[in-house]
Image (tube, rainbow, N blue to C red; front, side, top):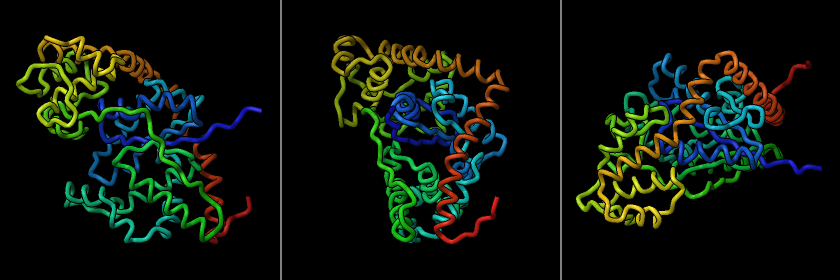
Length: 337
């Protein structure tokens, strides 16, 4: 008998086209995860509306993000790929979990504090209960593992705390998910301000390289990347003066699969200008197949619509069982079918 795979779940917000940090830090690893686990990947459109979003742009970016996952190699017949809002159980379980998540626990969330400062005119209830919806996302699917970065560790802790609290009150209902650590990937920094993470929302157009940027755009952005005055392609971890070149070396290594030592040896005695051009070229080459497949899939609207429906149906079938179990535990009355 074939051993049942463990389940892994992860999502991405459609707040803009994914950038190099999203791709190298998470999305590229999802293809590998899909071979090892029973994997579910979703577009977290409900989370996106905690910030001001243009409705037409949200729909466009949700579809773009979905198609990009397929273009990157996620196979919808082997993994469950869906849009969060297409499965109403996320919101239904979120309400139940809201009633078992203490206010004090939510008020300590650092992301709520950070985001409140960024959008002081729109500190909404959804922003505050964002971690509860994230807990519902995870617990609905009885996920064994959740790939998380440093920014999301608090959210996973709340999911685990909420699951434990619910299980303690009503008997075993949810699995307690474990964090999954992907193979080490260097944090990708802004090309313009290399002591800050690369960001989708950066106002400086040269700071962020998006997965769907055209080749000439990618190369131009890397040519303009901030470095230092040493003009020596060498990596010095922790040295703030070398943050720019460290970032470029990390990106080069990620796309060429060379080590830092190999890269330093290859570029010994050569200048920054030549190296920045080379980094731009390997990134553009590395993204070429994804971009071509994305364009091809985007033109097949029927196929994408079929994938959206199938993904929603597969996800809903799992979510429905968990939701019904939780509803019964808290005392909600079911209607005989």
